[in-house]
Every structure is written in structure tokens, then in C-alpha cells.
Length: 266
Image (cartoon, rainbow, N blue to C red):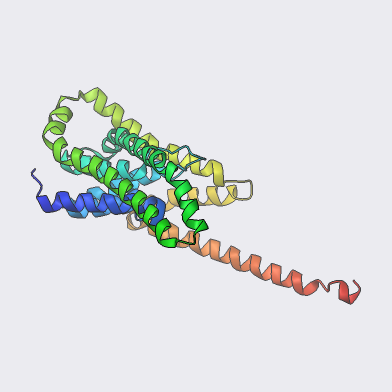
């Protein structure tokens, strides 16, 4: 399937904005579940974009930079997963696994930009000493544009040049390798969620985890509730969290009222 020049330009713009958002805007526009839906709209297959974006989001949900070390980049990987799934008609799990090398290119791109910009930090310190906010702004704008251009170039080049070659490569992949990629892609989302749980979970939270797991099994096996299951569980989870917040707030307020303080001689 051929794509128009407008679609190519829009894919570049989305990648450019998402790259900047990841480190500067911080509006979560770069998250795969968002970029997948937007790329799906641009390429005319919103459903596939949502499925691939959601799958990739689960895989990367526990990834976070530690110090100067960058994880495989979610912007390039998430967008390329959607592009591959839609343009090459790949099954979502296969597309997610196939996009991993592209996420590594994004990781290298971030490291490259950080390396190139590091000598300018002394210039930023000089601007700060001189109370020159415009100079600092220009440095920030330079780094944002460089990152957006690198990410946009990677995605656009593979999007434009990979359609003809990519289909031949996909057709040449044997069935057993396709099955392996599908299994790996399906497993990655659980690994990502497990990494997140490792950081978030403590013994006070395990009860809520098992409660949610059990409710998910029950709701997903009721035909009338299976389709909106995620929304139903999210609302229930929000209700429990809000109730818990109210209870803790009231208990803290009551404790403060009961504490007479030193001036009461207690």
C-alpha cells in the first residue's frame, strides 16, 4: 500500500513532537499508547494503532532511566511498532518484537544528543552568571530540535524506504521465526509490568493486587462485561483508591485533634 507525502510529513511531525515531549514537555504525548493511536489515525488504521500502542506501553511501563543510562527508547520503538504493524500487516506481538532494534536506535540517539550537548553546559552556566535567560533558552531549543530531528529522521527514513524492502523481508521470514517473534512480543508486556511491580509493590499493596487480578478474571469471563472490562476495573480501582485516601485523611485529622500539644500540658 502506498502512502501519500502528507502522511509521511505527519508521521515526521508526530515523531518530532513526541521526542521533545519525552524530555521537555512531559505531557505524556510520547507514550506508545498515545503515539500508536495517532499513527493509526494518520495511516488509516486506528484499531491496529491502539492495539500495538497498548501492547508496547505494557512492555515499557517499567522502563526508566537510571543516572545517565537510557533504556530502549519508547518514542521510536512505539511509533515504529505501529508503522510496521499497519504498513506490513504484522500481528501486533510480532510488530512489537520487530520494533526493538529501532528502539535501540532511539536509545543511541538520546545518548548522542546528550554527548553533543554536554560541552554547552559550561556556556549555560556562563549565561546564568550573566542573568541571560535568552541564552539558556536558545541552548534548550537547540537540544530539543536536534533530538526531534534525529528521531524524526530515523522513523521517516525507515517508514519511506522500508515499505518495499520490508514486505520482502517479512515474506521471507519462516513460520517458526514468526511464531517465536509473536511469543517474544507477547511476553515482553508481562516483563514490563513485572518490572513496574518490583519498584511499586510492598506488603501493604499485595492485597489490592490479588483483588484486582481476581476481579479481572471474573469480569473478563462475563460476555456482557468483557468488552468494557478495562474501564470497569479502572473505575472500581479509582473508587477504592479514593475511599482509602478519604479514610487516611480523616484519620490524620482526627489524630491531630486528639493531640493536645505541649501547651495543654499533655
